[in-house]
Amino acid sequence: MKGFPFKIAFLCLVLLFGLPIEVFAQGLTGIPLLSVEEGQEGSQEYTVSLKILLFMTALTVLPSILLGMTAFARIIIVLSILRTALGTQQTPPNQILVALALFITFFVMAPTFDGIYQNAYKPYSQKTINLEEAFDRASSDIKKFMTRNTREKDLLAFADMNGNKKFEDEASVPWSVLLPAFITSELKTAFQIGFLIYLPFLVIDMIIASILMSLGMMMLSPMLISLPFKLLLFVLVDGWTMTVGSIIQSYG
Image 1 (cartoon, rainbow, N blue to C red):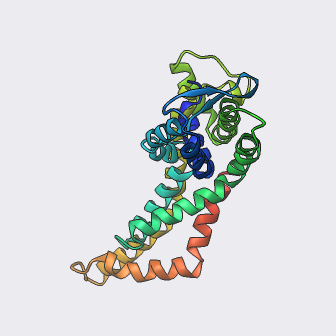
Image 2: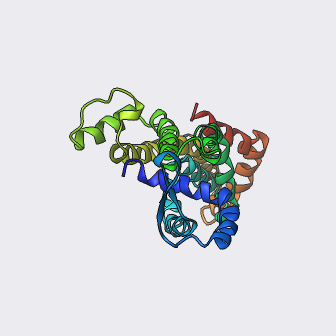
Image 3: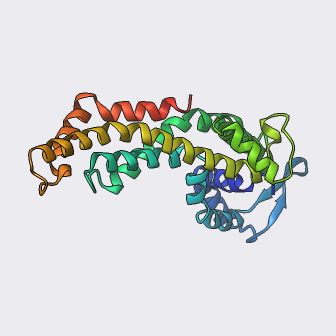
């Protein structure tokens, strides 16, 4: 099915907002389980039980969608490299990094999510479009975000391996090409940003190690001495704001 991974995610969003009222109505009317009914003007309407089944199935796909179709992968990799460069081991803890990465992801993806709400979910909730058309509109918005943040070189490489020619526009890029090209591009960009973040801390480690060797303190760990200086430098330049701002700006 065209755009199937994102269609599953969008279905979850629809169910989260529309399920409680429909469940109540289900109990009153006694609609048969797992069935597709014919609605107005020949459109298809899914019963609540079938929606619940699709929703539970979608829960297993959501982590992959979050990792592979949003800005989350780039953000969490950069934050992990930053923690390694500081040498603070498990500080901040993994839970804090994941929470920060999620909040930044929502910030970066806000225009895309707003477009999905306005163009897909809102018309569907008002019953002006059917579920299939809502899926297509939502898929178009997320595909636009992914295409614009995918390196052209990576996109062409996967298109060539898939036997496709150049694409006319964003909508013509198939998901089988866009998904691996996007995640590959995200990994490359994340490591480039991570290298630029790691470099000044590496210089501090080298300076501290050289000073300790010149003083004959070879048994003293350079990491132990350099850690306070790296933390001081990071705080003085407002490192967290700079890092988060750089990540956000990398999405244009």
